Length: 204
Ligand code: ZN
Image (cartoon, rainbow, N blue to C red):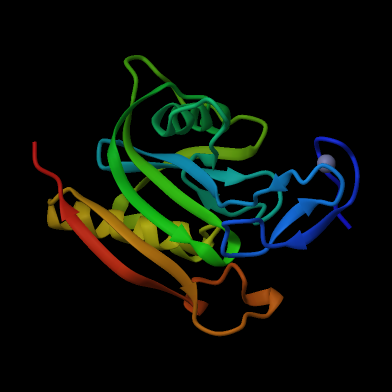
């Protein structure tokens, strides 16, 4: 049972007036508690043909690699959130550029926005408490067998392919599981597909 964050009484599942789906509604004060997807923001920091990745020090997917990324905070722009996550996880100040990937992950209620970025003048990388390690990988040598989440695997594949082609693109798409997943498969990209992928060439 859930409880109302406003008055503390129990909530129940009900369709509020004018709505089209069930929500958690307070049985006492009628407050509707909306549950909406979370936005994950991060930076694809490139320097001399290499990409910055962090080895996660926290669950889930501890020990696996990810671009610096995390949940957007209230009151924050997506680009500012991506820069903050990079500061927290890789210790580095960055200049945030255009988006590279906007990928939806509806089965876990997340939307990823990963931005092109560069290290700020004089910035250095030093892993934060959420990272075991933070370092640059050559784009031809990204650790594809050890990427933390399937959505990141797709994003990095697209990034590496763009670098190879020399064309800067922005990508959108939806990450879906191919079939009902067992627990051991839930971070394995082979069990996912990137649906409705579209690529937009960025012009300068
Ligand atoms: Zn209430």
